[in-house]
Amino acid sequence: MKEPAVSADPTQTLAFDTSCHLFSGCGFPAPGLHSFLFEPIFGDANSNVYFNKTMLLALLGSIIIVAVFWAAFARPKVVPGKLQMVAEAGYDFVRRGVVYETIGKKEGEKYVPLVVSLFFFVWMMNLWSIIPVAQFPVTAIISYPVGLAAIVYILWVSLTFKRHGFVGAFKNFTGYDKSLGAVLPLSMTIELFSNLLVRPFTHAVRLFANMFAGHTLLLLFTIASWYMLNGIGIAYSAVSFVMVLVMTAFELFIQAVQAYVFVLLTCSFIQGALAESH
Image (tube, rainbow, N blue to C red; front, side, top):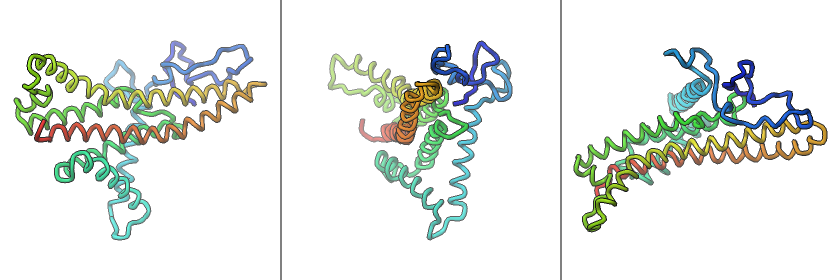
């Protein structure tokens, strides 16, 4: 797992010292913050231009998604080829299985392009974790999930005001129900805090935390496999390597699930903004 790292030692460019092994007199080079910080490819933090590995992966991921769907649908055929069939299956899964099921066909159709784009973008950013050379999930950097969640948040709030007006939106966000009586002010305060602050926060953090934890575990077992590859430690190294394979397979599942959960919550927010009764 070769990953650029920010360190007090300017000569350190890897996530761990490859010459360090069990019984060689050095401690286990556990993954840490340096595993998630990258030197800029060009520019620096003090200038207006800054471009690092995660930005490159996000850019490449966007290009790949656009290229795949462009190739699949640029010249669609009545009898689809393999690429068109796969692209149609993915598009239809998000449209029918997420958007229609959550928002409804009539109201949800206009939001299909957004939700499909979010799903495949998040999935691609997650997939970088197990792709050789890249080996890092872009969504393990909190700014990316926050940016995506902010897009959904702005859409959700603006739709709520547009559909219900100021008073209706206020009731929507606060869960206004006069039958609550004396506890109504407390209930409204809690609901307002929960809806406008907690919900968007958890929307972003859920994706970030899962990918951060998954990458840390993969990195931990990968480093351990290399570290114990010495003398009798080879037996332990084999067990650790098996865990790398198991965790990689598990990560494949989690990556797809997290993309699904992210867009499912997105549709839930939109549905709540459009619903007539609250």
